[in-house]
Length: 455
Image 1 (cartoon, rainbow, N blue to C red):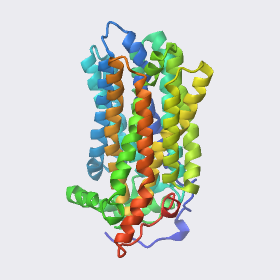
Image 2 (spheres, helix red, strand yellow):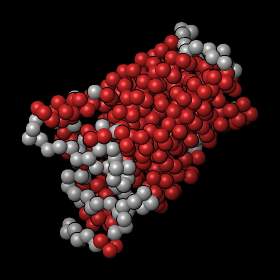
Image 3 (spheres, rainbow, N blue to C red):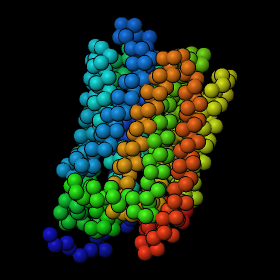
Image 4 (cartoon, helix red, strand yellow):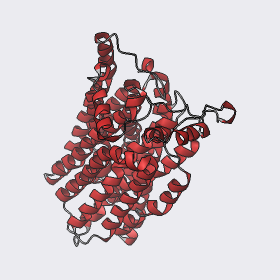
């Protein structure tokens, strides 16, 4: 299909304001993602106290892992389905799926059916996050990808705070099932808005042969018109070729290091989101205080993302992520000691500042490693492989809780933080080694976010 020449007079300037609608819609979707992920941890103490339901600590950890196992499958399959449905419809499908999973949890009469509901919710949750990240990075103004990513991810923590509020108010008054009924709201609120207002990705449109539509969307939002280099590969063969490109000389070692850092980061995120209230309860804090710690750590996460996004645009996402991982490890070690309640709130809040944005900056760091044509595939695999950490985290703490060793979970979190710091810190070194060994390879373009010199 012939593409019309660019018309500068009709093209919107590429500013933060022009892409705000995309950011706002993805923000809403990720808000509900964060609410759904954190609902389970917020109501777990009430579910464990419900003798009629029969949930044990071992079951609780297993179900948490089934949720994140569903997210792993969702993250790894979303790319192939995007070739068929596009990113917009895949986002709608993801929101619908995790809303249906929440409804299944609300009506579940036994632990097995409840676990199935969490697995179904995980399938939708796993596909949603990489899609929203890819959309926001594509539409973000140049050199503002880290900041825009940080702003997007604040919604996850607002959603976590909403889940905690439901756990503190609705669960004691009406029962834990009504909290999961609240998880059906995304299908009612977000789906109609996404269908009506969210544009399709210009890169995806071009890859599907819809060049004129791709140019029209790019012009409307002030984006550069997509080229074949920037378009994601379509089909199974194209996707296999795209995965092979992640291991070209410049990124041969950086890719597995990003995977390891993402594994550690998501082990922390989902281990804490699932088990923090119960771990704090085991340390001797009351049920209300223990659940409220989940709200405090998510509030800290919002502040941390706002700080990390701006800091990473100035100093590089890799450097910020490494420092944040180390500070997370320090916070986890402090929480392994029973501190006065006021001091504990402060430590939990500060740990939230570092913990969640350490992982998000791993995502932002993909812009310093992968070229435009590789970015969506690279980000998908970083999030997908990282989901194995999300599976391991809830399961591991569940095993420790079954043996009465929840406090060891804080040590496990600290070790994950240190390993994540080392992994992400080594990424620039391996890139330099790869470029030295392959002088004929073109340098990585520094578009869309923190550039290579800042890494």
